[in-house]
Amino acid sequence: MEINDIIKPENKVYGKTPVLKDAVMHYCPGCSHGTVHKIIAEVIEEMSIQDKTIGISPVGCSVFAYNYLDIDWQQAAHGRAPALATATKRLMPDKYVFTYQGDGDLASIGTAEILHACNRGENIVVIFINNAIYGMTGGQMAPTTLLGQVTATTPYGRDAKLNGYPLIITELIAQLEGTCYVTRQSVQNPGAVRKAKRAIRKAFENSMMEKGTSFVEVVSTCNSGWKTSPVAANKWMEENMFPEYPLGDMKDR
Amino acid sequence: MAEKILMKGNEAIAYAAINCGCDGYFGYPITPQSEVMETLMSEKPWETTGMVVLQAESETSSINMVYGGACCGKKVMTSSSSPGISLMCEGLSYLAGCELPCLVVNVMRGGPGLGTIQPSQSDYFQATKGGGHGDYRTIVLAPASVQDMYDYVDLSFELAFKYRNPVMILGDGVVGQMMEKVELRPAKPRRTDEEIRALCDSWATLGKPTSRRGNIVTSLALEADVMERHNIHLQNKYATVEAKEARFETYKTDDADYLIVAFGCMSRICENVVELARQNGIKLGVLRPITLYPYPTKALDALVPQMKSIMSVELNSGQMVEDVRMIANGRVPVHFYGRQGGAIPSPEEIYEAFIKTIKK
Image (cartoon, rainbow over all chains, first blue to last red; front, side, top):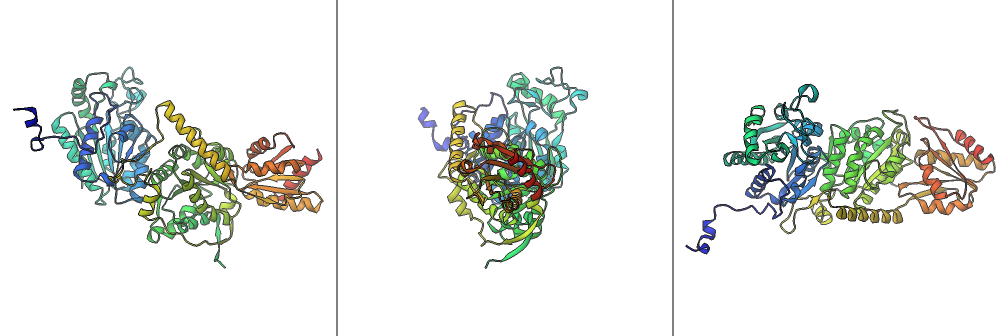
């Protein structure tokens, strides 16, 4: 069989969604961002909402999310994406509005904005990437950094007396009346990717039902920040992150 | 004759916003301007024009809601007072960097810090020289009456969209709280989605049609040459604003030997100072800058040669006087009289201070 006999439309089993641009990603090999971007792009394509979706990118590594998904984007100040999303959704209720935020953006500098947007029940989607470290600025402690975890600003490991405790913010968010769907997912293997994609699709669907805020945490790896290989990062995440940040739905109504 | 209604300056801001087709207001309570949001909430414009009104969790959030709304090509605004405006300065820098239209109303109170709830003009530097980080400018209008508060809302949106730039109405506790008769203007409907698409589709986040790539509203450019080009573009825009949009009023300056420069509520008090001076045979006039940025540099420059001296009168420790001195450029003496902390001088007090400067 010749190669041209194989490359036929009827034999196609997988393709890159056109919602993802043909841009070279700046993310490190092994980083979870690329996978999460891809599944958001696939959900947008499958729901046929590319013309109705507004993304809000954060400050942090994923500030450049706007270079990869071909939709309209707003680039927020650090932590303020939920405020931009609030106004955008209220002024254009027929649009799908989502924020994409890291742990420093959402759970440190932006705690007020995320809690109040969720508490008001804004009909938006929040994608929360928790990799327990600041990637963009070079591996400093995040609010979600684990006790004992070594970072550039906790060189002897995170010490509760010195640095406080990991902020388990998604459980807090789940308690707010304004949220309708709160879940924690991961993307380290094909099964996890499929589950995370289903969660993100449900979150986008919710945002047109006036049910409130949908919040999807994705426990993620930052092998560069963690100073380990992509494979070892996945193992470290499963062994250390999952006990602190257990996967699954916290709320679905 | 158009209808006239007695109202507070802060109420005038709210009524004007609804009347001129504002799409969204996002704010946080702070004295002395809380009547803006209170009036909007009691008027319920979402049931009439469809305008969104939302009480945010902070001024930080308010300005970032304005940022989000402005990204969508909507006419959006917030209002606050001095400490709240300080919190908004980060957002203002982003709005200016992204070249987004919006209106921010500052009903100034005395500072620094929590300061006082009494009127002041001590945010002149913050409003006209930046406030937030980076090389940017905000167009600043200084109302002297409740009618100005009402009229400048529509004017602000016109300027904001013309130049895609934040506009600030820099009022003070006096014009915010006092009541005057206001002549209402014909109502403008809110822009339709189609009108916004026609006006803003080249840059705004309206949802990406298949005919174009996604729009990205951002102020980020990591490459030095790209960032420098953007800065040069902004400076060119500001130069156009400076050439075309300076606004001012004069009071009895034609034959004047002496000049007072004052903005906002102080310009009205200083008109009474002119009358006191003229009763005593001294030809005094007033220049009132309406735009504090762009400053009416040419107007003041043209008046300088005929004056024996100039006095800047402000409710602060001497901020605008720096611009007046720069324009006078040593040609005539420039004096300053100011009050702080909420004290409002009487015409007699200002006249007394003025007489001392000319007897020196």
